[in-house]
Image (cartoon, rainbow, N blue to C red):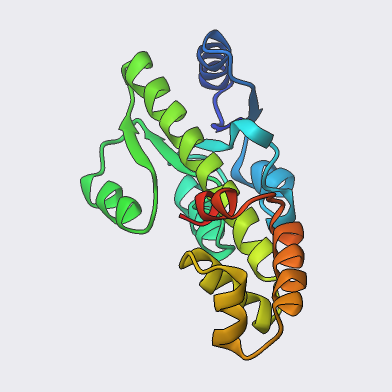
Length: 199
């Protein structure tokens, strides 16, 4: 989902049309406050599903400006899952440099090249998807017990069940049970699939 935050209707409409021309879903917000109310909470991110999320954020808006919105996203730890591309009609190099250092995905000055901007949007959506996938893997890892983590590490090192059992001083049957729990919790069927998930 491409989230377009700009107080100008014509800009929001033009950007939404550009996004749709590339097969992307877009949603517009006339203010930073409206955007944060809709997707600013940590549980609301992921509205883009398998296609990812990205924000096109105008710097200068009445009320809450783009930098304040960005600050809120940084504070909530959402920048990885919700990459921000700033748009500004007022070239401000120090502001751009500071925003990029703090995690903004890119900074475009109006007028911008439509194709270059949309290429960056697609790259930001890909980054969002990757961050979302990594978050899912980390959440699954967090469900493993300390012993399951030990078994997992040895499985990833390529050790067979008997070797794992000897190394940990437990029975091979116990290793098999831990292994089954690990595969179940990580949503994989084989050690190869597990290794691919955690590479």
